[in-house]
Length: 337
Image (tube, rainbow, N blue to C red):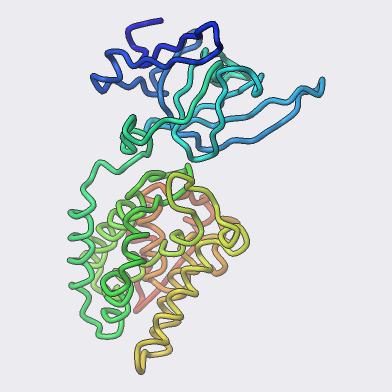
């Protein structure tokens, strides 16, 4: 057993497993999953993200485990789940495992020999969940500054109703990822991504006065709010049943429609323009947008999402999509040939 290991497990003749703490765990040392290599023997605490019973081709039961820390995930196998040293635990428990790192089909895999459920004072949850490097408070302050800059009475009221008055939503928004794996897949990722898109939209609105800044900023702040319902909170960060059936674009548009109904005399045209920006923000039908962009603000928001690498448009989209307002061809302005 190496100095990196945090527990030493031994068996007394009576069969009782004795778990002894040693210096590395006491010193706060943790070996993260991205540091592991084939052939390593590990002994440490990880989050059990998933647990599923299965049967081999020979009819022998085993368990599939997905281990997680803030650096990533690793597949694990318990080939003899009824053996001594394999204690009971459930998905989303923090577990202390002993095992060997192997390789299967080009991916790292852990052959688990012993496992037990860890006590709460043995781990720090911050070590197991990916978190934005930016302060949540700082990001929220920047978000509020953009909201306060919106002058349109109705759009301002809608933004404040969601991002200021709805404490449950704010908490969910701050803690959500922007995607499961593609981009910003960490706690705070949704807010970080939203701010990135909004900053670019703010710059574009200043460069092109023909753009309705209030509409563009509002659309950029709201474009991914449906992801608070499409994806579950950490540590799962997986698609909900509702999310799989409806998707974040539709759910976000529905949320905006419901909010607008709560604001007296909210202009129908303005509501439809805002919802259009949400429905079209993936640009092409094959990328999940129910509608193609028909407003200059919709195209402007799409281009900023491209800059943030949320999705990659086809050349056909860049060549054919045109949103003209007062004679301005925004695609040609941004992509001169």
